[in-house]
Image (cartoon, rainbow, N blue to C red; front, side, top):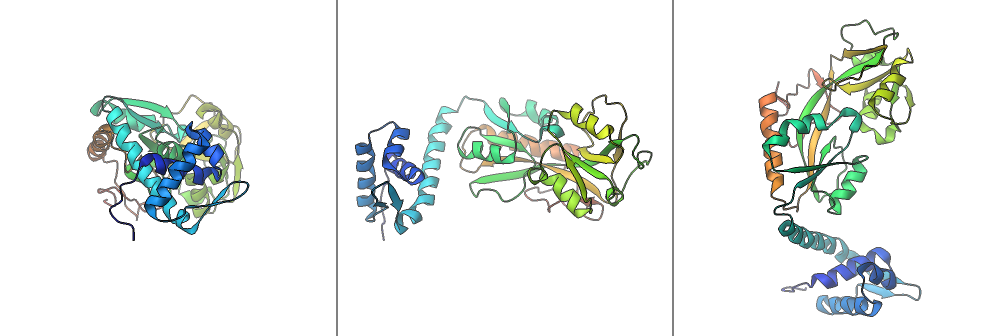
Length: 318
């Protein structure tokens, strides 16, 4: 058993890049070093660990059993080292936060806490997978939107807000005059989505849970265009958080959903090893606003969530 070994992070970085490329030449090019230098670093690492990490092949390399076992711990160690260096560089830098789920306007919620925390640098991610990649690569410090599993083990998320969802439908829809609707009443309507449902977890789960079998998708060209497409077809509907300001779209109705009320869950997401000093302040500001504005109220007898709330100490209360 290898104990008391101090790893050289340059050697670990060489190993991780070579494991990703399975080719010493390409890995060396990515690190801007010579192939000979990369080979020496990996050789020294193998000597230090007392194990061969790569099988050298004519066209490249392959990980040995020991190499496979070392890869994930090596990635974590490299990530922690990078985060430590980045934390020192970021002492006076803004907290970089990306949002996604743009039709549902995540900036509305962040606006409530932006003045109570460190300086924020806000950006836009296309969707959850894109944001996960940015977090894991250290391109951003945190993210805000709807989180659903599975998530990489390196990430942490905290529930911030559970927001009631309304149905939006054409004024010519047979149910448009109702003061409120039960989700099951929409089963014979057509769910309109701004993209493929396999990438829109909340809408897909709603349709599955309440037996909405007819579904149609379009292109996300912004909220006004999306709602105009709903208003133009008498059988279509979609879902929006009740607090989203609606553009002036003729022929559109917004109707509350009850018995149960669907809730859209907003979460703050970050890499566990990230040491940016603004993360604690942002999480605390979100928790404070959630308490003041009762954002985490949830009654399973009255409300519907695709999954049970997690990481929200006040969730589950009436």
